[in-house]
Image: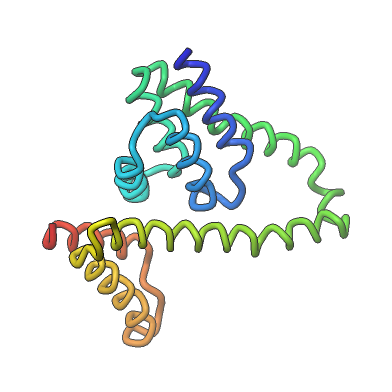
Length: 182
């Protein structure tokens, strides 16, 4: 039964995840928590680990959760399920892409999806910040200070360095600050 649940749960993520991995995090959270595979705290940590390891976040999370729940076969099954819809869609789109991109309705749908995806990613980020910084005991000072410091580094780098900070460098800084603070 766990194999069917893993396959169907991550197939659902793969089918309905638009906007990349960050847009899929709410859906992954919903599926994983509804099955009770891991806790919300563990999922948050796994998202952080998945961001700092090579490979797509959805694949890393599916592999970890599949392995955690059903061993190597569970990892293979969950990973296959999460990438299968994208693989099939890319094959189909490649065949019809030339004509479809000329269609004004297709262009309109794609333009309409962009702000929705941005909103989903922004809402997920804000939710994760609030979940880490504010809990039932009040404000977690360490988490709030680390978050504020990282935001300050991100935005001050634009003005001081006259360029955006590399996401990889920001992840490395986050890991280093986390080691110092926690």
